[in-house]
Image 1: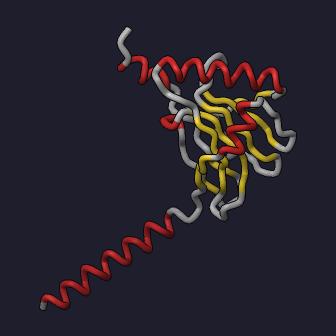
Image 2: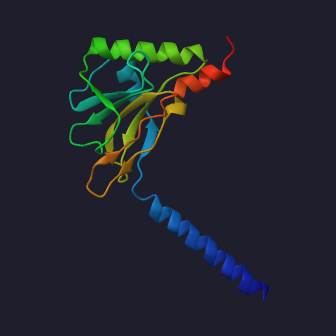
Length: 159
């Protein structure tokens, strides 16, 4: 009897894990990257990327660089930015200023799709990360971070 219960429990756990694996098979990852960090810190614009911001123009919540061969899913709330080193410096410095106010530090990531192919770069505080989903038609779904990413910090931070 104990053996049967144990085997049933094992089967349920296995099927649950298999279901979770199947449901996450189209998700990509955010991978911390020193190389991406150096590019952002040196305000290097990669011509192979399209750049997007999320949040206020003055203090964006996130900066996304997406390889030109990939498309964001329709309805994405990202705003494309014509990027040059001066504009990148302005965006990054404002993001750092906002993050430092709350004792936070922006990080740099390489975005990889569900097949571990690099699809872009990301710059934000850790709390602003979202997810990356490869849709059936090959477009990427990358939701913008919550619009109140820093506002939530501000409410907790004493004046």
